[in-house]
Length: 377
Image: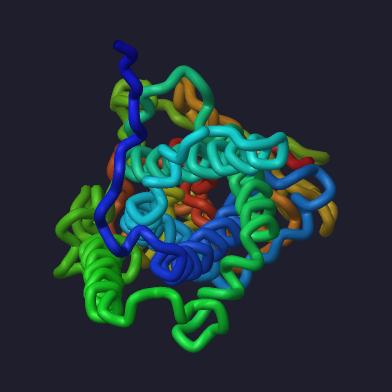
């Protein structure tokens, strides 16, 4: 007596091409927005040498907007991806599993697409809470897999173009074979998915879109929670900066005419006040009032040429952003400060006392805290 393993059967009526297409086009929009804003974020955070001096410092809220959209669209894509996988997962059990070389390549491309999408969305979600349970560096791997995901998605769309075209709208030709009674169930499913997307968006986007901060229930940051009313990602303790390391602090500026300033001498220079947002790659942001010395004034005192860039070094003992390079556009912007005060108060140690950089349209990781040295490039 021989045992034959029959493939599982699925009785759900919504595991069909029309439902998959309806959810897929919404997912494609979310992924496209997330990808484009993510690429912009990557090059603002890690610009190639030829681009570093040309990055724009305006609008001042530019990075806040694009990074907020990046994180929001990535989170919104998670329920869409899960719904999409639910509609198509019976196809994973087709028999025989491979019918031809073309079919094998198609299934391989789908496997790459699904794996890349799951990795991108869930690793990005873990990044928002700063939890990295993997041995590799998040930023370069996340950036590389983003291109892999987009390539696999374009290939998938090209292969499935006839089916997508046939089921794009309710009146598309080739859809008459679908039972009419499935319509209400399909609409209910799409409504539920839309509600899920709306729920996760409304309860997380308040960390950057402050008018909705009262609904900020699921986001890892609240824009009002933190020392001096501003959140902190990297504390002084995490950076190895203590109160004992600050006494005797001096700002050393190196250039054609190098000099050094004590904190009192820095405070005696002309002070400027600006209102700028600090926006972090994890998706949270908030505007604050910053007071300090214009970076361009410090560069001029060091004899820097008009087109010179700047390198800033922090007191922190370790960290990927202990040293930061700033292009000439940012360095010369009148809103770029070596800040000494936040919201009218002396900077707390966690916010970068005795001095930190604040510049318009810059990722938070490049707003260097605990500045000890500046070098004209």
